[in-house]
Length: 254
Image (cartoon, one colour):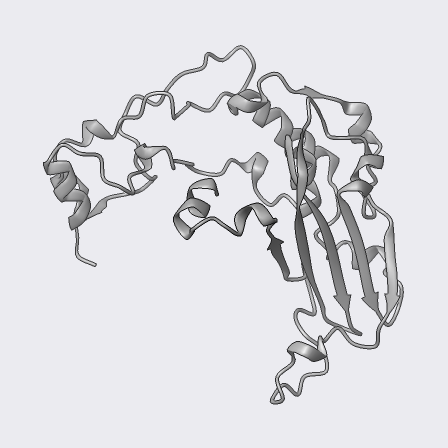
């Protein structure tokens, strides 16, 4: 795609966005302020010909960040959250989830299947009590041996209390839907840090390969990674309410 210098573009001022941006707050006493300059990606210095044409007509380009799809840089407080930690900081619970970790003698992989809740739950207090997590999260571990502490450290289901606390504090300061959230330290302290916060259903298996999805040309004894965090794939299973929607309607809802 042909790109031009952003400095050559005209009418960039129309990329300002009222009510859709916010200057990051560090403490509760910081005022809530809008970003006054045009909404552009950090270090953006190029623009495509389609966007230039729109700007020349004084129209906001279709895929401009100023159209409400602006996210900005992900703050450190929200980076590298495990899957379990993401569940703890989510104010709306849309899904139930089954996580399966498949371990061999050396390699490990994980996947999750999510199911839509009939009725989403909205939390006024986070994190939720640890006993509530069993209602929305199930953990199945398969392998030749029962999981150890070092095995759990490679899974996406460990909870770091300091990380969860920092994420919730940041969201309360900077996310409009979290401004009235109550952060309950008592609930957070009830989560273990050396193991999953839910019951582990262990099932013996001598391999982590799935025979149904293994190619006839695959001669490896095990799948996936030997070290570090195991690869993790999330599969969504939608409800019947989506079956009558066309692709455009599903994208808008998403």
